[in-house]
Image (cartoon, rainbow, N blue to C red; front, top):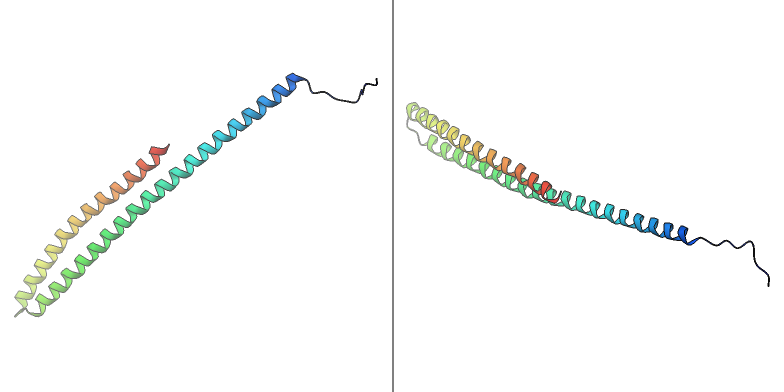
Length: 129
């Protein structure tokens, strides 16, 4: 019988060590992928929240613009019906006072909407982390 002295046998301890190393590497990779997927999900959710809130803010801004244009047309219609300068001055004074009140209320509402949008985005970002 001839024995092959060039054959190399991997000791069982080395195989066990290599197997554990591969298992640990696999677990580390799985943990990394899980964290990455969670981060991507957080970003997507935050982006969706921000986008939805931005749409609300845009709609609100368009509604405000429409209100101002309608008020300006109403003022113009009343102005052309005025009989004298005193009536015109009174209409203008009433229009300006009304617009300042509306603008103040709209500013408060807009500020509340913007604050809520920022808070919602922050909540969405912190929920997933």
